[in-house]
Length: 287
Length: 286
Figure 1 (cartoon, rainbow over the protein chains, first blue to last red):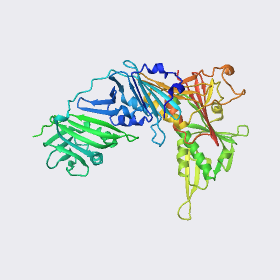
Figure 2 (figure 1 turned 90 degrees about the vertical axis):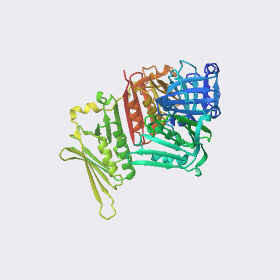
Figure 3 (figure 1 turned 30 degrees about the vertical axis):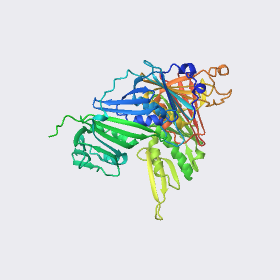
Figure 4 (figure 1 turned 180 degrees about the vertical axis):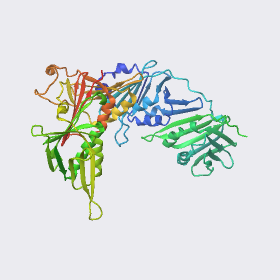
């Protein structure tokens, strides 16, 4: 499918000359390949967009302790043209999502919204051209100066424990989590209980154990016993990304910082990644 | 004053029920006018309902197997009632399986529209259900307020896009907007819906909609319609909630749907179904 905006656009904004004014142009035949993954990280109003020749990274942060990143590689897009090394801007994510779903976000087979996302640079709005069934909607979303995302300085060499699980197994646990517990405790160890999720709520303590030889465990690499607690309110949003994913990697580094990486398959079977970084809860001191 | 009607066909009952449900989604109360040939549901534009007005016309023969009405006197052979359509809708939903439904004007503790139906049960004895819907009788001297609206001197008349698409778009626009929506259209079959706030502007372009041929009889703007630039847009800025309300209420696709725009004054929506017609006027916000 090819978007012929140049002939159908009544605003005549899509001439070749105009195109050269954009520092970023990204097109998708199916806007859901962007909107679904953005929904998975939409726990805060603002999102920082960062584009390079590799593709698009969208970051959402909460109270300096939680950061979500969605990666959509350039190959996912039908067109991805960038005229600078790095293009960055910030938009209100809820507004962007409403625009991407302007035609109602129908999940009917064969019906999809085509998207062309254009950005002229600092001070300009983010322009979206959306088309479904011959009807075109143009959205201009005000952009802000992008905030600098936090660098958690998380690197593989400092990872103490790592597991990769099939999402199925975690989905059940996360849907049943005792929300009256202020924290989610994660235990990772080379010995029993190997990988354990614990809550301490009004109904008592609950533990979910995943043995290292379980079918669901695709990779088990734990070197040292670590027990860390994370605020439940911070981890709750990760459930959206978990729901979309087929696999998740859980890593904790030597400072107790948690990295969750979700492998997400889009409508066309292509792989995208969503990752979350979360700082451990410092308030409660384990004896 | 007398009114008795009987519906025996389940399809007619269904359609009647659907019409009333549509009306109930548009307004909490309205006027029901009964004449020998028709039923009209009327809402006249008042500040309280955001100035919108509505005119819904049904031909009684399309629904009723038996229909008898008698006004106050032969010269004023009409009955005018104020009713809450939601009450009628609920009552009709409970009798949707009935073989026969009777509607009549009665006087219980107050004037009522009474709906009586026999419902089938598992045993041989049927169950009779009666609903008394309180109504207010509108006196003759006020009838002039509820006359059929004239088609306004519009600048552009255009067929509406598929209502479902319009509804999807308007729903999202309402989330984004500060309640104001611009509707504009031209004689080239193009219609745009727009919202604009500090954060975002969204415009949806509908094309190839077609313009209804009203002919010389009806008004076509200040007699310059022949020379009106087909590209020129007539626009009106309206309260998006009114438009959303109108679209939410539509349960079935009409056979014809059109929109007349009087530039910066009013949006006049007309839906024609096989068995009823509905007109809805949304005033422009100054």
